[in-house]
Length: 132
Image (tube, rainbow, N blue to C red; front, side, top):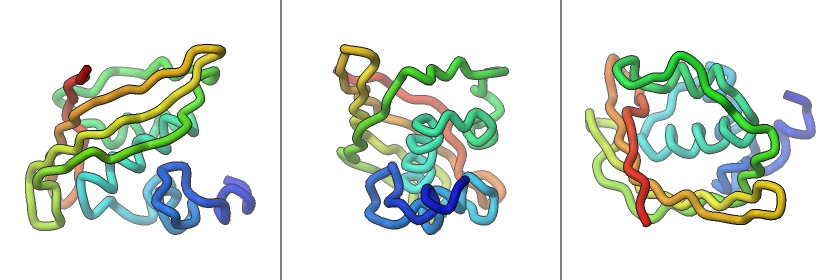
């Protein structure tokens, strides 16, 4: 990443600089302590087209062999609706979120309830249900 991206506010909208937020997870210098942190970092990875991070943080039992990320997809805003479990001492958690996007002239919202597990001290994305 360039210095300007590292010092800019993180795309997950935490309010922290990218380098101190999702950037440390993307670089591998830190692990997400909560399911919500992992969800935020995965949102940022989708926005930055970081396929490697997305695959590394996907549970092996449900991970695809590859992702088809679309460079034309602009992820604009992330809203955390709710979360359950997913704390530093939990082994399971869910995070419900709304991810706002623009794809060409189309605008939309991906509303999902994602499931996470913590194995060997690492949070992993398992799967999610798309909500209306």
